[in-house]
Structure formats: structure tokens, C-alpha cells
Length: 373
Ligand code: ZN
Ligand code: ZN
Ligand code: ZN
Image (cartoon, rainbow, N blue to C red):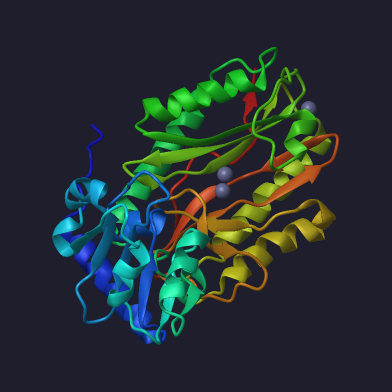
């Protein structure tokens, strides 16, 4: 029986906030400012509705974390899973929230600011503290959320298993004669059935639509003879799933089979490159090399992978130029593809975690091309 993982405790959040504050100090920062969004969820478990009123977590080494919130949100903030590990300080409508926050910050310091902080809030703080400077949190601390602990890995593994169950079930539904959006709705229902609380995307790219990696699902009726790119995921117990398989309606042509074989080989090569110390860009290079050698290099038009955690897409990225070395506990996608404009596309994607001596997949359904009806 699938079990619900034990919730993260205030101690878990205390440890995460301390780690972030220490990492900031090591990076020469006076502290870290975190607005509502994935970083705040990861550090405190607090998920407020996004409003124009300032909410910000202030972290600095050797200092107790302070969460600044509007007064009307304070009761909710006090109930956040990590609330016992921080102090809530509120400001009331009519007060200047930046003036209320400024005393918590080092006047001349440099602060890491979470990437989704509204410009208006950062500008408000700059006005109060003209001597302080700011840097993107992802730029300053790219590994802040990248390395997952055992509890997080268990959630990501469970989310991956649920996505795998979804794939096994979708192979049984009818494709030919149905709209892409109908199959997409089936995928969403299955993700929920297997425990997802949130569905982020359900790509059904049939025939020529599969050649557009941004295509989600549209009016097109799926035909016998179509390649169909399936790419779906969301959140289960707060952690992400994201997997792709490309299926064929009826028997494929030798040319279609060949393209699929190349992508599968590239995906395997990317996976086999995963081990501690290898730079992120090497995963991209390993997958891309296979596709280039097969003559499809110009048709692999996106990066090979992205991180995953409390969101389904986050740093680090498996892309040329990303020299960050892999560390055990990191989790990311390996998802090469080939896109033939006007014809079809193929993408195969697994979430992979870095282990002490290699990589381990969280998606384990067959990668061979499945034939659907
Ligand atoms: Zn075909
Ligand atoms: Zn995907
Ligand atoms: Zn992905």
C-alpha cells in the first residue's frame, strides 16, 4: 500500500535555513532574502497566496531567521510547518513595509534575492538601504535546492513511480480518432488517481505537433500512423514528476523507428554519464553527440535536462556552459529529442538522481517505442 510520507518537521526547516545562511556567508553574502515561491516553500514550508503586500524571509548566518509578513497573514504564517524555527514579524497596512524590514538587514551588505522577488519590493528595499547591494539567489547559491536529502529523494521517487503508473495505463487507452486534448485529460486524471495533488503539464504532440517541443495538446485528431510525444508531470506530496515517452499508433515505418532508436541511445548515453564530479554540461554533450553523429544535430533544439524538486522545472540545467559538478542527491531530467518540422518529434525523458557512484532513474517504464491503438 502506498503510504503518505511523514511531513517535514520544524527541525528539517531549521536545518535547511541554517544551511542556506551558512552557504550565503561562505559566498560572501550578508544574507538571503526569500519571497513567496519555491525557495520559501523549501526553506519554511510556507505557501502564502501571492499578493502585492511584502512577504520576505530574511536569513543571515548566526541570526535567527525572520519572516516579515503583512499583519493579516500573520496567523497563517504562524501555522507554517517551519514556523517554530523562525520569528514572524508583521507590518500593518499604512506602514512602510520596507522601512519595517530595513533594520533586519546589514546596511552595506550584499544580499542574495530569490529569483521571483517582485521588482517593486526590491526597489522599495533599495530606497531604504542605498548602501546595500543584491544578487540573484540562483546565481549566488546555485546549489541551494539542488541537492536533495533522503526525505526529499523518497518523495521524488514516489512521484516518479506515480508518473510511471500513469504511462502504463495510458498505453491501454484509444488514441486513433480521439483529440489530443482527450488523451491529455486522461493523463491528468491518471496522475491524480496515482496521488498527484497538482498536474503541471500533459503534452500530447501527435504527428507534426510532436515536432514542436512547446506544443501541449490541441484540437488535432490523432490518426493511425502518428508518432505521439507524451510528456507529463506535476506534484505529489509536494515534489515533482516529469517523464516523456514517444508512442506510435499502429506499426511505425523504418524511418520513424530509426529516429526513435537514436533518441533512446542518446538518452541512455546521457544517463550513463551521470556520476559525482561530472559537470552538468557533460550530460548534454553525451546525449547530443549521439544525435549529431546520426545526422540530426540541428533537430535537437533544446537543452538535455533541468533540475526538479518542489517545482517541476528548476536549476541546475544540463546545458553546454553549465560547469557545476554533479553531487550525490541532485535530481534532474535527461530528455533528448529530435524534431522533424512538419513530420513528427521524439522525446524520451527520465528523472535521474546522482548516487555515490553513478545515477539512478526515478522513471523505469520501457523506453522502447510502444505501439498504441
Ligand atoms: Zn507513423
Ligand atoms: Zn517533461
Ligand atoms: Zn522535463
